[in-house]
Image 1 (tube, one colour):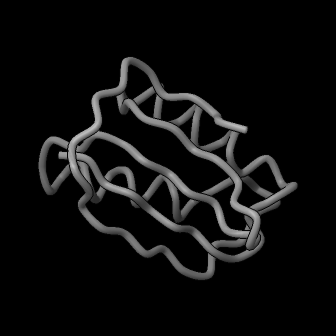
Image 2 (cartoon, helix red, strand yellow):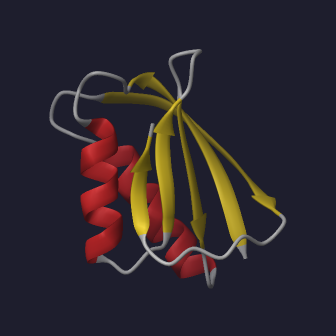
Length: 89
């Protein structure tokens, strides 16, 4: 299953994408994270089950030391297969 997340708060210009990417890779997630023009960050990843969904949300909530996450919205989207986790620009 593939999920798309929209993260709002102080999440741009604070090493947030790098934090998410590094921690997602360490835990074996595949997908991407990128900044959006409206100040939010989008993350899309493959999630196998409910426990993995909770684990990825925890990564998004924690963020970098300089970030502040106000809200996380997510939805299941049509499947996309990823080979790695990357930062997109």
